[in-house]
Length: 254
Ligand SMILES: NC(=O)c1ccc[n+]([C@@H]2O[C@H](COP(=O)([O-])OP(=O)(O)OC[C@H]3O[C@@H](n4cnc5c(N)ncnc54)[C@H](OP(=O)(O)O)[C@@H]3O)[C@@H](O)[C@H]2O)c1
Image (tube, rainbow, N blue to C red):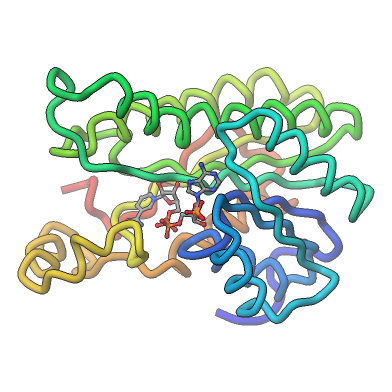
């Protein structure tokens, strides 16, 4: 889908983890919508490549930040205010997984690392965004969860627990911020074709096995996730809050 659809013109949107995958495609579509976009990631090379691919303009800003580090999150939002003097929408897109053993055999340091980037980072960004949005009297927060939040699967346990935490955070923030005209929602995708899930879809036999369990018969492309996210970020979704939209081609209903 191309062209403007969500009435996001001039909105200032922070997309965490916007240097590749789903986040980069969200940033690209936001620019089509004439929004102003800030992407962040840990690695400068990834951000440079993303800026190149987004076509370097004064409507987009890339900031190096590890979202689990509070001082880097503070710096991120300071830069947003400096550059654009306003802030409307936060897309909590960062997520990472390191395949783990069973919970009983997972080292606490690995647990901490996965919880930090997925759950603590989402908390730190949402907390800062909520403070700014409350002073301006409006805002939207959309977080990327996962089917892993709802179903236990091997190697994904800690990640799933973190994502389940994000879905509960969505409800808590939504209830606390509704009176301040701030809506908070999530999108929970099944498998999406990005670097994150490459070990699964790049193995043709495994890929076919996975597709058999999806009524739509295929895994998602990033664009399948982008549009539900942009809808939830738009004024059209202003009476929806505390919800998670599952985007999985029917995988969770069979
Ligand atoms: N792909 C899937 O199958 C799938 C399925 C369900 C849900 N999801 C969720 O969808 C979201 C996007 O995933 P994706 O597939 O697009 O992943 P991806 O291709 O691996 O991209 C992840 C992005 O997040 C950044 N990042 C990772 N940790 C970070 C941190 N601590 N601080 C700042 N930036 C960080 C990465 O850049 P750096 O490495 O440079 O930091 C990159 O820009 C995630 O929340 C993921 O959990 C993905």
